[in-house]
Image (cartoon, rainbow, N blue to C red; front, side, top):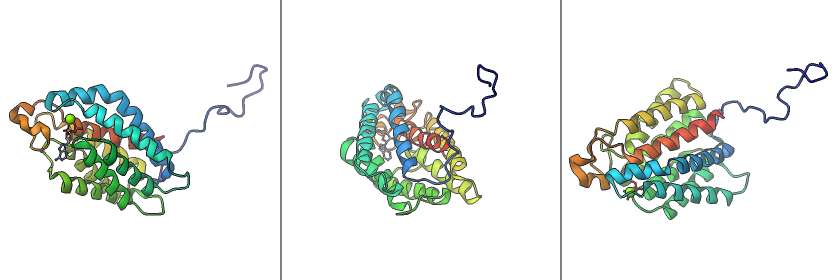
Length: 234
Ligand code: ADP
Ligand code: MG
């Protein structure tokens, strides 16, 4: 590019924000970008999540999740700029547990609270520390809801994401690379719920009639993880 008088433009990026390199650690600004991304994506996906829940539940998953995202954004706004990632993630957990009803409110509240408790208290988390926290958050959800992989719940997305995150972090992946693998595993896990028969939650009342539908909670879990992947890649 050159300017109109023929002088070469020596600063072609001037005026547009500088491109950020992929994140190497989960710090407080990344948590804020993550939850802003979650809020946008859940608003865009609200109708779809409600439709999925209408097929095998009570058609409230979309509104439950968007209400939760709004509450999470409000909770983060109450925290000072210099707070830690761990504190912000735990605050998201508390806000979801307080504001969202149904099964998913307490379950996602527990997931975020356990994630926040497991992250390093003061320092930004490395890929390995985040992978470990994803494992602890999954354990807490399973302790509360008693769902195993294959029961057609959010665990079908959260579990492969945590397992693959741990696997690739152990072999030296960086944070952004690890999150790409984890988000892909969550999405695959959500799609894999389609043929399953639900064995936990409201959908289990349908028995064989729950087969052939993607689980709404596994779908929202994949959205949460892809939002984190996107925020880290920014
Ligand atoms: P509700 O079922 O109370 O209406 P939502 O519609 O918001 O709550 O959430 C439904 C989702 O919650 C399901 O699609 C499923 O993924 C998840 N879920 C329900 N029960 C459990 C459980 N015991 N363990 C894990 N996830 C569960
Ligand atoms: Mg529901």
